[in-house]
Image 1 (spheres, chains in turn cyan, brown, yellow, orange):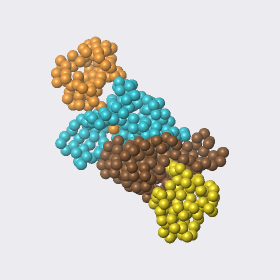
Image 2 (cartoon, rainbow over the protein chains, first blue to last red):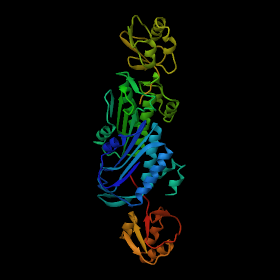
Image 3 (tube, rainbow over the protein chains, first blue to last red):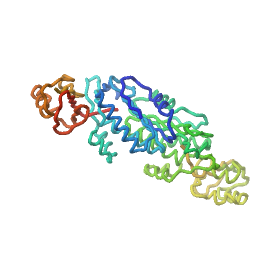
Image 4 (spheres, rainbow over the protein chains, first blue to last red):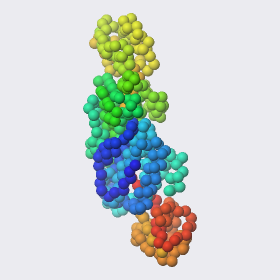
Amino acid sequence: MSVTVQTDMFDAGAQLSAFCHDLPDAGGVVSFTGIARMDDGKTERLELEAYPGFTEPWIEALVAEARTRFSLSAAKVIHRVGSILPGEAIVFVATAARHRRQAFEGADFLMDHLKSRAPFWKKEHGPDGARWIEPRQADYQDLTRWSADHTLKEGS
Amino acid sequence: MSVTVQTDMFDAGAQLSAFCHDLPDAGGVVSFTGIARMDDGKTERLELEAYPGFTEPWIEALVAEARTRFSLSAAKVIHRVGSILPGEAIVFVATAARHRRQAFEGADFLMDHLKSRAPFWKKEHGPDGARWIEPRQADYQDLTRWSADHTLKEGS
Amino acid sequence: MARVLLFGALRDLAGWREQIFEGVGDLSGLQSDIARLYPDLTEALKGPGVQIAVDKALVRGNVSLSTQTEVAFLPPMSGG
Amino acid sequence: MARVLLFGALRDLAGWREQIFEGVGDLSGLQSDIARLYPDLTEALKGPGVQIAVDKALVRGNVSLSTQTEVAFLPPMSGG
């Protein structure tokens, strides 16, 4: 289990290779890579901020919950902060499990929560100025798919 | 869109890097890597066979359906045939889409169909001899999740 | 003439991968020919989940076979 | 003494990121102090989706604040 919050760019493929390198008897590995979109020039740059000392443990607790809930044999999260340009990766999640459904659901669960619950603040800079991004309604709806998830709903 | 059936081993991370290299305005990339399990020594080797000239077009039709159905901007499938040892990757699927849910569902859909519909035959060699593997009941049940999918249910 | 291909468990059962059958008019006739020559295959070829491809396209029911046809018997599939 | 941290849109609204507030007994008292000094923040700090962390643990309702406490106001979050 590994959680990293970093300003440096990363290569999703290199991360997946490293993740796959020593997986004891996993049958399936799922990765998700979130990429900053250009949105037809509306976004020139994203600025992402975390709360150091708060954000990392929050994600670690989330990953621990995912491991238990989906019987994951391994899981990894990388989340960038700082200035991010369109086309660059923002977030990387990888999960390994005995069966593919567990790996898929684990990654899906992690991303739904990272997207609308994790302690990050995101500002979009474009030709018309800057604005803070809040989760879309669809992001909040995605969360309801995991409704047995009381702990995280309470925001811990 | 790319479909490859090959005997050579591949590195999932290198495939993901290549896939991410030129994605026009995708917001999310999902990959799935299926790995041959050791199963506590029960499996010594897998032997996979395709029907050349039939298997590739079948997968291409599946990928085309996934692209339309989940608005994928790109998709890639690599499937190995021949002799495969525990720990080696058997199948790799990558999908890219504007929003993460599309990418997740596209990859999930592709894997469910590859697992129990795609024209491959799989033989497991172990200490007690060899046996042909048929999809588990769970694999067939997974397929019912995509029940609007009439074309593929008819087996074409 | 039909070139018959067997895959997976069917091939192990038959002990052959590929055979040429001459003078074949339709799929039903071909199946009868196979059953006569290889009685052990009769049931298996009709088994649950066995699909048939003629010239690399799946077919259902009986179809007429042109000359130079490839007929593949495909037992339940399992990838990934 | 409480070190107050603002994140995201709250920080832009306030024009500051971090401030020390002296002589603070509990969270309600701190919120009153902030509202007196920065009236523009009063509504925003109570806004929908604003969570409060005391010493990096989320809290609900009023809590007493020990000395050397860190209080963070966290507007709606958005990662990935």
